[in-house]
Length: 219
Image: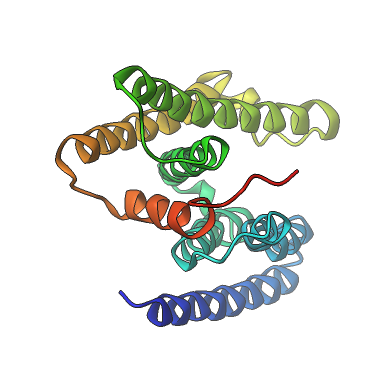
């Protein structure tokens, strides 16, 4: 797909995000649900994180990444956080699974940026990459559970479901992210063996070509 088309899709995703966010404000204010109004304010900020990171590191935009970011925050922040979709069975686990896919791809891009290459000298070098992919994904999943536990300890906000599920919710969340990371690992293995790419791998390669390849490291 042409770059201009991806850019237009990104603009469309911004419009959809804005309309749904406006609805969430109106709906929660009318219902007098000020907790979810607060979550709507959080949803204003979350789609800005990825573009802000790109701007800080002076990376050229990769609109596929921007679209994925908007899609995830749309369902996680607006529908999940502000419109309380987390009450539906399986919704939370689906998002944690999706986060595992996206975080693993982000870790792969981080690896390419650190090493300044997307090629491997030998099988050992490739194995290190695959380990890095999964440990990075799991580290972020664990840090998120730490954050939810801190919300319980310091603000009595039981988003970790401690009082109703104990450790079950946290373990299932991390398991969903881990399974997604393993599946993306298998996609990378297939890619390096056969050359067959998935959308996320194509996105990682595009990020590398646009922002890492033949770029000098700057402090």
